[in-house]
Length: 171
Image 1: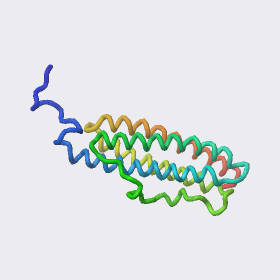
Image 2: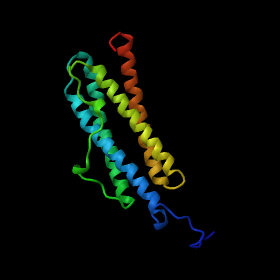
Image 3: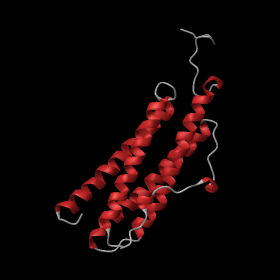
Image 4: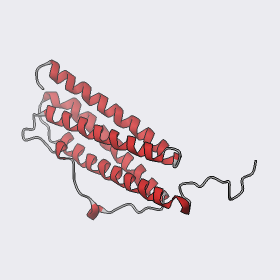
């Protein structure tokens, strides 16, 4: 069955979808900055902690740095594909107060709770993108669904770390 111009689906790259595309680009740009900020925070929080109990959290965050950076790169690429412009560093505004290094470098619970909050924020935002792109931009939706899976896995891992500290009366 051939389609005529009047019956052909107007894809996200079409002029008719400009407004929706710009909304999606704005959401992707926020996601990009969330990932970039998370990378910075995870580098600090995988370097600064002291103590024997910190090692597993440090190693997990070191691995997550690469994964979160990959997510930022995926968001950047998709912004470009949607005719957007990936912003430069002068547009960055930090927001993640909960991921700042703790006052005491042995306060691993502070880091764990910060990671859980960051991952929860990402999960909430990515679910919004999935809803906005539903039926309109399947490529972005599929990409974000895959990234969402990673974020849910990170949150679940750190919830396990927190439960362990709570069970031992350390949280």
